[in-house]
Image 1: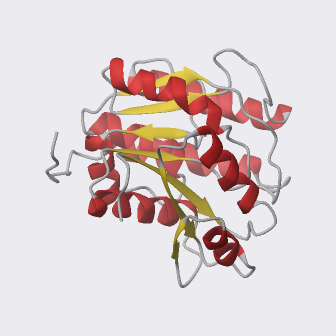
Image 2 (image 1 turned 135 degrees about the vertical axis):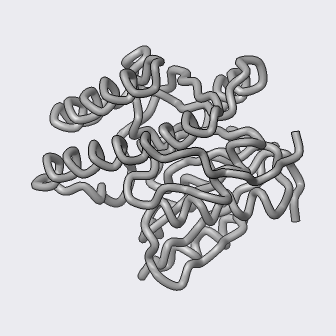
Image 3 (image 1 turned 135 degrees about the horizontal axis):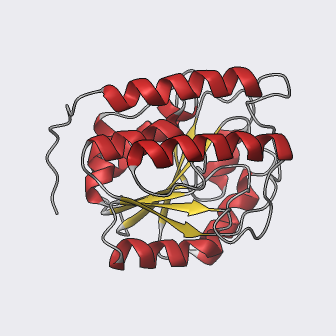
Length: 241
């Protein structure tokens, strides 16, 4: 049952070790928010630990990947009538205390989605050198394609308003969702803004991009972005402003 206008969506795959701490941190820093954990086909006790911590839990029957898990969260947000929905990783990388500046930016900046960028002020954990190089290349590509500055296109720390929730509930990228979603918003005429945030190194789990995959990942995500940019507007979902 909805108690707040803000829903925190936490996609989680095999995060049983640390999910309670992540949820406790969110509750402490954002006490007025509701939380839903999308258990993405975990093989450990992620769902049990999340429920024990007091979060609503949606358990998927199989592992859909981050795109499918996040869209499930947005569908839940739309169905339950939330006005705002935020994404936060289940590995503890995102600091809930940074949500305040994101909420201010969404409320007063005229954007439909706000992305927390670790590279605007370059404070906190900045990722490995190789990944920073890849992120910089993607940021440069998106800056040219979208006609505005993009600094942290792979950030999964995001806050959406009503129009973005409705869009993502209806249609959300699956392969490289964080990057492609920025193009999707632009294609639909919706606005995205970045605000500086501090992030920390993941507390538990490991990245899905292993040491031998970055070049392959960069080639595929670049192709996916270019294809996404050529798609014509097709979204017709209505939402309440």
